Amino acid sequence: FRRLRCAVPVQRVCLSRAAMSGKYYFVIVGRNDSPLFELDLSVGAKEADGNKDDHRYLNQFIVHAALDFVDESLWSSPLMNLKVVDKFNEWLVSAFVTAGHTRFMLLHDLRNDDGIKNFFQEVYELYVKILLNPFYEVGMPIPSADFKNKVRVYAKKYL
Image 1: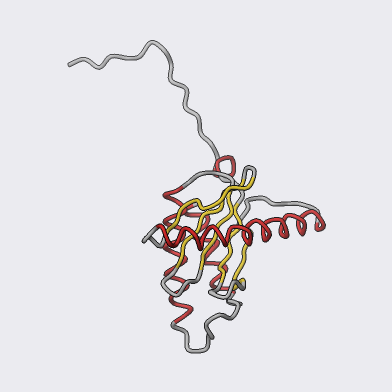
Image 2: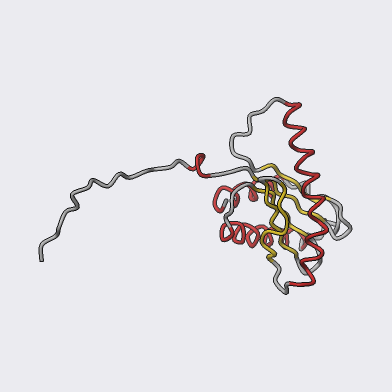
């Protein structure tokens, strides 16, 4: 058999990781609606301090507003991963609910359902390890730098 060559040259496009990744804001909300952990996972967010604070407060507002949609979605879905539960302008809010009613919420601008699902699974395993720590009190904020670093690693891997 002879291999035929295409007459039209195929142009390969290589996109860098930064060109494909979007803006992400991750929050763990306890069962009494108190934030246990929050992390801005946006790539290259080099902004002025005042503008960065404004975006942080807007992100918190959007996630807090989506908590009601998460609670409504719990009744209609038996799954822990609720996928996209709310949309605000170009922002999407995805949620994952643990058996203890702790909510993992991710505010993002790009659809990546499989990556977000895998990210939530990995962070859930980390969260369970935190819960198994005898010095951690359930419902208290998570101050661990190792936890934050591992969440960043999983965000780079899956988001």
